[in-house]
Image 1 (cartoon, each protein chain N blue to C red):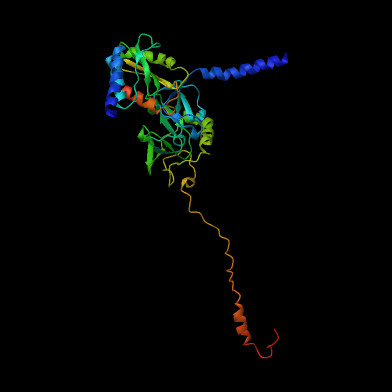
Image 2: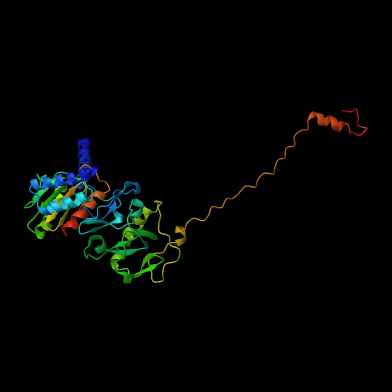
Length: 129
Length: 227
């Protein structure tokens, strides 16, 4: 039962991503997180995204996550700076890898040591680089 | 009127830190979360933001607008790799940021830890698993030395934590500051200065009444009847 849930939850998240119009790159990242046991919530089209990016937002492990896809890696790198504005006045980061930018913010102070954020960023980079 | 002016000045002074705190503060690499050992450690390695500037500024350097921690992370909760160093040394920015932006300098006296190996091994000597910088200290090291040596070491002096054990003098090629290495050796077994034990007290129980009678029997005849 537990195992079937573990399969269903990531599958539901991926299906939701697809329904929200998420790209295969974004799906690939969320799958990498799910495969490592992170709790990936439903990512929906982002109300606040990055200019010229196709952005989805949701929560992973209780952290606010926004994934934005750009036309090419250079456009993603250029958008990385604007990602820090999305973080706001909390601990967080904006990281470009490949055509994607990941903006991650600990709004609810769920991860005071930053370990979870660090692992999510690492998995994101591994998947995209 | 004067009171009003004073209150306005106070309001302005109080507002300054608020404005300073409003701008996000960027860090590169992991670092202590607060200035206290019990404050925990931030393990986020990529460039990231916090709402506040570091507490112990002497333990950080600013590189391209980023705060970079160059102290010993162990007393603040670092539980990753530990590499042994002794004395002052450069840290390649390439290690910290991945960019070729020269060096920053660690001004920690004596044995300490970092989570990374030195980059340019030709300028280092490894003795008994401890790295000593044996290259030439450049002008920028000397320039910033008065600014950092005392504040950096004052942060660590009161903290009790496991420093690397160094059992011998530094190699001759090392020409940085040398501490008395003995202070980092394990403490010798405690010597207890004893107070001499009091002499034993022997308690002889009084003989039972019956025995006294028995002894009376052997009294000298001249003492007999004088009890």
